[in-house]
Length: 323
Image (cartoon, rainbow, N blue to C red; front, top):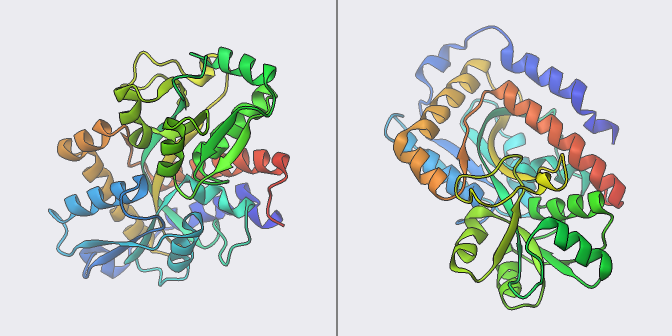
């Protein structure tokens, strides 16, 4: 996969973002509505973060930020649309970390590194490792022991290969040399329903999706995928406390077409970061299990680079890399 030689390509992107010169139109941006395309259906994490940003920007921008859902192919349909859009800042895409995974699963009609410019990492959320209450495990150590005692008998659900919850489980399996069978679903909600019904035994799930079921007692959380314990579940240990180095978060970020003027990228980042730190927005986001971020483009690039290397290596090990 030489076209995804991440380090060199990302360095080139940095030079684009940091290049000198301020276009005359940047001072008056936006002079018309901005379109933020979301590659997933309404109601999910990506859509939620996009809409809360758009709603608050309406208080300060002279024109609206309009959220448009274009779901399909793990977000790559929306990403392709934006990659081929004019690089003027008026067409953006909100992606999840599936953006760093899909290049290794399928051939794309765009280059995820060369054709897009990072604006900001808006938010992230860890995944909870959850089990059906009847499964006789209460921590990662007990789960690993059970999986080794019953190889290929336990099943886990996800919304599909390449999603963050799927890769979190595959990373756990890889690190523990266990055989837990994957059962794919068309979305996270159907997987959660089957888990509550006892048709599968466990899964990773984002806090906004599975947290309420854990709070109600219908599912049991045994660990969390963040490197540190999470405020909404302060008593819950991290997976890394048992498996050092384990981390598997779901994140959401904004990209623009490559070649977008640096001054416009900077304004977008500053305005969106300001929205995410607004007390009303921050309270809404954190109350649902997200961490509001709003970092700078070069910082977002480093996360993209890290995740492409990390998940690409795992997927190649699994034999799932794109040909």
